[in-house]
Length: 346
Ligand SMILES: [Zn+2]
Ligand SMILES: [Zn+2]
Image (cartoon, rainbow, N blue to C red; front, side, top):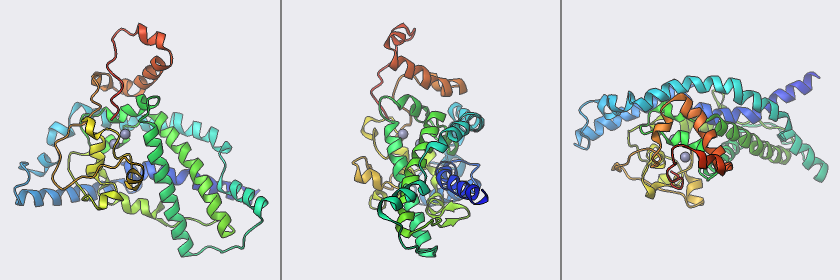
């Protein structure tokens, strides 16, 4: 019984922890190293500010102005993001985690796949735990998580899920906390999708190794997630332009590339869905690379209904209203205010 519960704990940790690392470690300011990464991001921004000011490449007279000043950081949308940050934490505990707990036992785990493969082809010789295997397994966890998130993100730009993801894109200004402006339905789907794909990956890897291998971590986070988070990841949701250059951006997703993803210009629609890696964007034809010269972009959805996303209620309820109208056209016909075009997904 003791062994079983240890295995169960381990598997739960395996399936859910990397997902939490993906969503919380990078984006959440309450992640274990959130404050550290935020500090690193602003330190990088300060370096950029000094560099650009010395060369006359910025009009900003102070660092505060360089990071958007009050116009961005105290914008109505940013103030809403700060409030939503706390509300979504409550929603996570009240809704997301109980649903995950409910579905969790029905998701196939690494051990399930390993047992299946062993029955099919027989057990393989046990390689045992060692550093290289741990690093390799951690690399796979990172790649599988990032790949899954790329496709979940693309799926949420589709007609049927866009209403939920639109909450994230409805922000007209970007501050680091905007990363948490994610509807709980999207969060839930992302967590479950990652649990499913990581379970399959773990099963295949463990079977090949003849037993369980743990991923190599840095301070409890998959090591590559930790490294990518340290690359000024918080500037993705900011008005500070940080490009990695066209070559590196074929593999690593830069803050500037994610800002392009938030652009309301049609030429930027359906570009840069990647989280840590833009390799997937390159592979699947959605890559848009940037240069050190900032592009003049404005953020938002380019749809005429920004007023519907100005309150906490609007962020949480609007997607359900829109989805119901899509599913039941009669309800849409009865809508008092006619909706604008719903074709311009950003
Ligand atoms: Zn998006
Ligand atoms: Zn974003």
